[in-house]
Image (cartoon, rainbow, N blue to C red):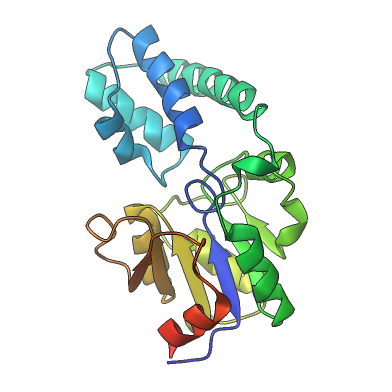
Length: 218
């Protein structure tokens, strides 16, 4: 296996848990449209773009909207979501993430973020991690959402490395598929029963260090 010289991280569910805020905002939108959104249904929204998420929700509710109405509702959802995100502090960073990235950078590893979120920089500022990343590829840059590999291929290009030298940390099925399609090592963060397509799965970064990554990538 080629040596790893770069790591790309998803944001939601990997660096910070914003899923609860997304769910609150999407559920409010669904309620406004006359139906409910369950936690189980919300799982389908992981790792996909805002508009794709809205399309899924509209399908769940059997609601048809014009393109203009879709744009309005998506914007309203984002406003609610950002209002909720204002509550975030560095304490919301998931356990072990800072230490792990500090270790990566100390070894000379390049570090990037690959997220469908258009609010990635805002969130990273709130948790004090904007400067941790050598590049940020977010929803403002990509034209194709996960599971398309574009987001991670752009990350590798920014970091001046080849896809086969990159490892991706993802908590969503679509993200794992994106990483695999890009030809990168895909490490799932979460449940093995869900992230079945990942090369490896870890519970989180609380007990995961650079030497563990090196062992996995040998």
